[in-house]
Image (tube, rainbow, N blue to C red):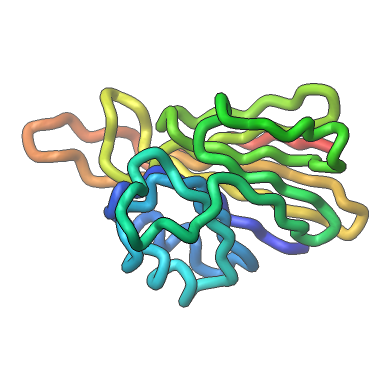
Length: 174
């Protein structure tokens, strides 16, 4: 069963906790605001990589990265875009079963009309009081998608209170 790791908004910070989560995955989808080419190089060593450009990826190194893309993983079409407001694809018409986005730094997962919309949140610098998080998709042989959001246990910034350890939540989608 392929394990697809979803990561977004690293903003040039690839935390050890995120790397540990990515270990052993079959494919990585990065939903933009990467931060620099060295992040992509480090991810590409772990697994095949699909990536979209975020609004902060404006430097020349990111010029060839698409704003959105659709990739078939297992038997499932997954569409990635950084900001869900920029989704111009009609997922139900294009055979897309999963839409992955970032930008908001807020992890979320909802199914609408048979399409799973998932935002892994931000794996980079903490924004406001939002968690540091990633996500994954497990795709079985019948094309059933099992998504999971994972809050990473990261050390608190100096002067901040400790947050709870890992707090995964799971949900299934057909």
